[in-house]
Image (cartoon, rainbow, N blue to C red; front, side, top):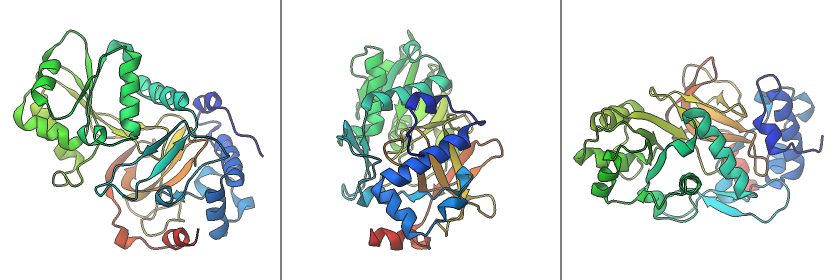
Length: 326
């Protein structure tokens, strides 16, 4: 089939028709994405045997650092870039329609928290603000603009942020990168009931901590806050949000699947922890099927937890070999 669904059709996907949509998009992307098509060809996948979304080949996420991963031909409205401790070798996502990206983000967060117009949006995202082309900053700024707010971003001016958070006139959502939230928590206690969305991000800033440890420290500094996490990445269009126990739920058009952490082509995993494959059907103009470097546990109801990152020295299989060939 050579038809790409409309994003509005993707937003209406349910468990009943997810497989049909996934297979339709896969067939289109494998024919219209040069990088994805070459990858599928090199792993010698038997296309006629694919009948379920779990059998679809997942593109290793490292390809976004070395190749332009797009479906079709278009002039990108924007190019999002991942963070990097060195500033080099970043992943890039070529976004065809910025309005659709923002609308997609809005639909997901409003499903979780209700209408954004009922909140004041704040951002403690210093490392993201200090570089260009962050998809997270773009999303948060869009939510601020939607509410016709003045700039709600804070760099390292924690005293001003504390004053803002103690103003209880309107409910607040604070998006914060983990290390910056913990730095703030070292010197401030905020008793106002707010919603904190922790976005990850400790590498190179603080010692690595489990999600439970992060939540415990934040809850001590924000005793009346609701603390949840966002799971998103440059390479995706969609995000998953957690509950207060760090268990994530995907929107209906997104699924997280397990694979063995030493085999990029597997679609099963032994034990309770697995490497994670992601299907994001909103990623229509890039690639909807991505093999990430994250480790986690997937529950029977489709929710999931993040437990860590893969050690690249342990990765075996064809993905790195093929990356050298393309």
